[in-house]
Length: 105
Length: 379
Ligand SMILES: [Zn+2]
Image (cartoon, rainbow over all chains, first blue to last red; front, side, top):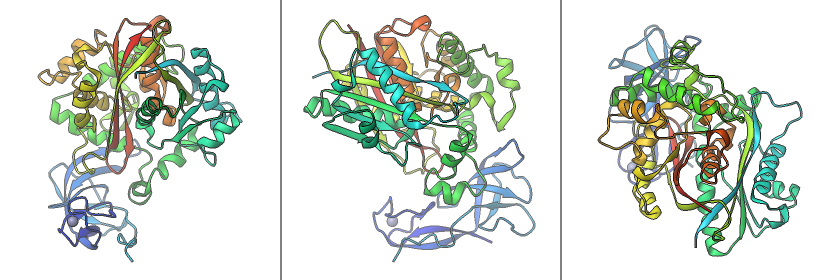
């Protein structure tokens, strides 16, 4: 289980959402990168019961996700997924286009 | 050369626009009222700028045509809550450069439930691809998590944010143009239905239909009540969305903004800061230096904001007056100019200097645009 983010081929900076130029080194060559886990930083429970979270990907960006399969507390390490119907257990679901690199020729 | 605001106008804010209301009419009403306030006619205008989320398929030139304006300077700004400062920055330079002599800045939106849903679902590509499908309908959840971060960083409680909302409602009681004017108690604030923890109903702005406009001219000298523009600064994408959102772009431009103005943050008698959420009032007052860096934020709210010894968002702000789409960015500029021109009615304060900030355009996790301007009363 993992979620696709973007890695700069020039300096290895991990990015999400996808950029056109790398904000660190200015290059424009990227590859998809599978991020497997994120650390929950904050959560918020919406009026309808949905729980959204901010997670920090190790060595990478912070992402916004919906928790599926249960609740989680700040500090907890969760598997990331691009599948809203992930298998059992608590996951952090990150919606994404099938190809985060689609601007690349 | 100094550039001054000599007129302000609004199109009445309403939660429930009459059937058939359209964005262009709403903006035109604000323009008409601002020109009347300045004692000018449409034929006097040679510069026009507009910001709106719902003007399409029309653009600035279509509006200019439909209002009969013949222009030598025209612009359209897309930066929502920061658009007023952006337009003001360009307009001041345009007048100084001689590109135009009388510029109207306007913003407005038809923001009923359907328009709001369309706007937040396709706000930008990142939202469309990565937030709306979560599902997330609008920025409340993002600012809920930002508020949690700020509570932890600054030791603030729900009560502290409540004091900001309650005080702005006190100001709104004396603003006939605010959509919510009935007194709000701290208990009502705390007991309100939850929107997204820790935010309740009164932490979130009510979307309204409405418009705002100001008229700018080169300073005419004495005889005309006016709000002189002492400085305008802007910051876009200061941190690449890689931070915690607790600092706005104002933190990087405040020093230059005060230097240009020739005064310091302690000298302002009015702060109109972009209040999409109480946490952003806290963040912007700190970034501008209006909240002294050595002062405890909770104490500052209690001693200065809640007592109204420092007037903040005297119109009631967006939290009480309403958020009229892109006009939300113009709201504080109109209020500050009205106060400095002595045209604020029952809520009139005596202030010589005001600071106005804009904030907006959530790219993914928080707003990426910020503007500040310092104004001075003259007559
Ligand atoms: Zn790079």
